[in-house]
Length: 177
Image (cartoon, rainbow, N blue to C red):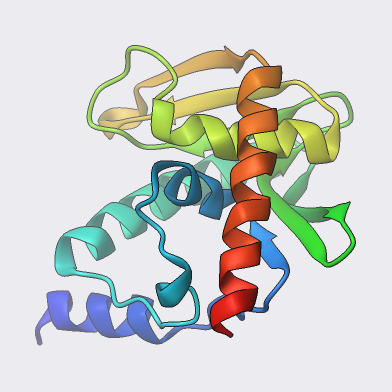
């Protein structure tokens, strides 16, 4: 049995967010801001490499353990809650958070090392903050359940730049569609 093959097959074939013109996810923003995401590739299905798959499954396993801890402790929260906002007519931004509590959000990340909130996470966190209007705490989960909580500080400049680039991306996508 080849577990690597099973893992790639599982992650590459499970249900994904349908790509719809005008509907964008908070997780899309970093690629849009940096130009790594191209309008011509927006509707193409992404295939994960084995390394991608190992990183994804490792993060999901750690997140699920945290979920079990919260459930066992009878802490009130919602898991993988989605909410959207209309940026302008024809453009919707969807944010999904890992753990939604009454007065805060907990977002899980599983990097190799922990020092600060990673730049590539900030556009997603900014969008989540704007959509849910709650403080966000990033919990970095590592091996042996080492963890560190960092509070995300909203950044108006990043938000405005994200919206500007999202609108430009949307316009280019409309032109090629």
